[in-house]
Image (cartoon, rainbow, N blue to C red; front, side):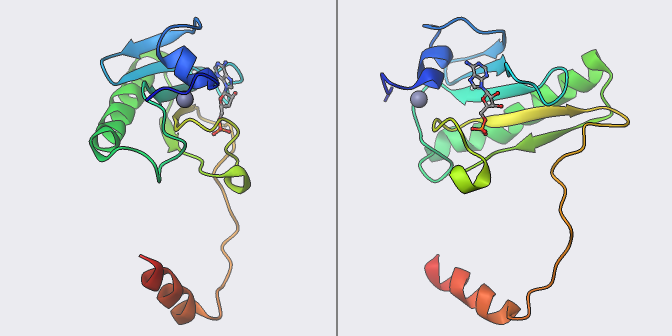
Length: 136
Ligand code: AMP
Ligand code: ZN
C-alpha cells in the first residue's frame, strides 16, 4: 500500500526525483538531503510502513542484507572506514518521516560522532526484563 500524503512513498516510487543509488522491486535507496556524512543513504521500501513494527516480514528480511551491500559499496567507493545502520522508530527516538527507512551512514576516520551513549546502571534490571518479557 502507498500513502498519497507520504513524501517517502512518492520518492520510493519515482514520483519525486532523488539521488538514487540502488533500486529493485521492493526498495529504492537514495542519498539523504541532510547527510550526517558524505554518502549518507536511506533505504526506502516502495510500500508504506510507518515503522519497524508495521514492516512486512518478507521486506524486513531483505533490509539488513541490502544495508550490508550498500555499506560495503560505500567502503569501496568513498573510502570510509566503516558504516552505521540506524533506524529510528517514534518521535522520541528521532523519527521525523513516518515511512520506515534505514539510514546507512558512512563513518570516516575522525567523524562524525554519533550513536554514542554514556553507560548507566539499572537498579531494577530483573523487573525491567520481566516487564519487557511479559509484553512480548
Ligand atoms: P528520521 O529522522 O530517521 O525520520 O530520518 C529522516 C531523514 O530523511 C533525515 O535524515 C532527513 O535529512 C531525510 N530527508 C527528509 N526529506 C528528504 C528528502 N526529500 N530527500 C532525502 N532525504 C530526506
Ligand atoms: Zn510512505
